[in-house]
Length: 481
Ligand code: NAD
Image (cartoon, rainbow, N blue to C red; front, side, top):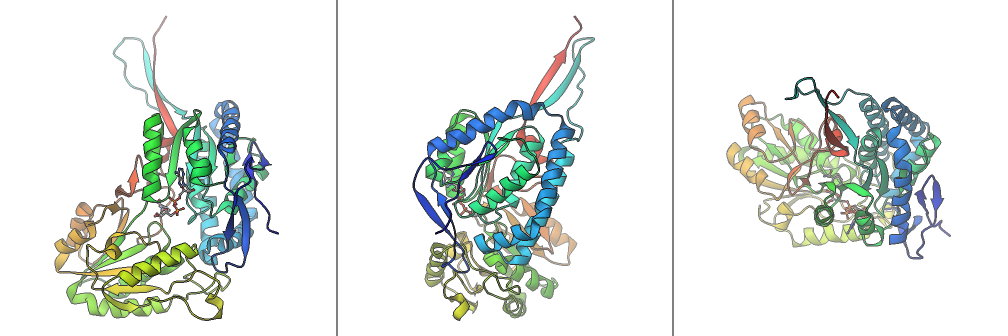
């Protein structure tokens, strides 16, 4: 019998008030039931928000150095359980173990960075019009903030929201994906072991319908940071706008590499294969389109095929696996039907994984399709799987136009050795994360992160952008009596 999980509210496990639950399955082997997850109820959401509201006054009164100290201790608590957390992540979301270890390491960096931010100088002194007065700005926390997160970075995304929220004096209710509740509870356990005050960081389990919307509508919630699909992001933004609370939504992508004839084709092929196929293409910044100069297409695709063949598809228990399963059977079906309907020539892949180890998991063979119609779903829709659509272009201008022909605008990379082409691309490409001769995936936690067009709304996350989101500005004038 698999354990039924509980919320983490006010520093303790709190069972859901409802009885409905879902199964959390290991994507590499669906016979392995990781946990039973409560669907959650509006009453559960109200309890989590009440706990965060109760913890707020004492937390926001703490000094910056005191809050920094808590975040440093949280980083140490994660470090102490790093391997266990990486293994749990591999099992729960199917992330290959090397990448899971990398994500845990990144969490430690995130917490330490925002611990530093809690003690960094803020505010301005502004010359007043009135003689003898003093005018300055203060930054204050928003209050209780809701964090709604997806399953694909089940530690890093919750933490890159929670760490700045807490550093600047907010308290948090995290609603993780119903497909990664165990990882969220590990965050709560480590926060508790680090001595964070009860109620400062709460985890509310359940679905969007069960608890998500009730959380967004709770009167004490003053801001929401969301990462997930475009459709849900639009709904979250609509509710937040109606309530006039602060929001940011980080959503999908149809990330693109452009390969020019003067590029280092070996490098381009290696990084395109990695960006498209590692973790089965399930990073929001994963490469899903390649726009290739027509005269380089044959040579590039030959090298790309070799690179893709070098990435091992397998269950994440295999330490060599670079391409794990996709998250669910539903995701696998969605990807297969998109491939079945696609027009173009298969360069490689296009089938399910075969062999005994693949029988019970959600595997899709890394697939590259060339000659794809730029208007077709394969070139336009986010598949969130190990699938790359290749489009041919004549020259840089056509390549940039094809790259920009998307409702999304998260990440792009150009492969070239020509500085002039690089500068033209940097100014014309419509994405938030612009790379030259790099992978479309991967972000530094101290640099602003987010996209253009349908990929994001509201302010950027991470780096100095985080303070803008998680604080309000007060402009203060003090006059002599
Ligand atoms: P999803 O949109 O299905 O779910 C995201 C979260 O929203 C989950 O916690 C879910 O329970 C919750 N939710 C669902 N309906 C809701 C509602 N009505 N009200 C409130 N909350 C609700 O996304 P997913 O499948 O978990 O994640 C994959 C998606 O996330 C992909 O589209 C991917 O591109 C995107 N993503 C984007 C970024 C980024 O930074 N741009 C990063 C990672 C993932």
